[in-house]
Amino acid sequence: MTPQEMKGLVRRLEAAGIEGDVGELDDHPGYWQMRQVMPRLRRAFPDMRTSLQRQVVEGDTVASFSILSGTHLGRFMGIPPTGRRVTFQHVTIDRVRDGRVIEHNGESGWLGVLVELGVLPRRDGDGGRPAAP
Image (cartoon, rainbow, N blue to C red; front, side):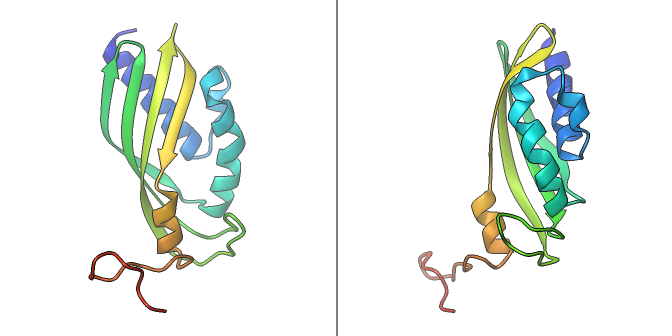
């Protein structure tokens, strides 16, 4: 695959998983965890969307940086629905071989989500200490 084709594959699969079509991931063994986690995440944030900001290809590896957003309308990590909208960063590194994603690793800004949901305190403007309750 060309670097552009690899980017397109990863972009399509990531969007499908985040937007709820986990069946799209079936032929890609690297997405086994995403197939399990995304239905639960979609129940918590049913309108979750992704906005790709940047992708880089090096060899068989595609690195992607996205912004995710959604409204907290279902239980998330034991937290009852707040109705709050959250926006957070999401970084993935995927290995592609023969047109299939064989390895997928990702990190999301869940700490920021917990702050946006009001579970953790926001920081004040003085040196990063947590704000008083």
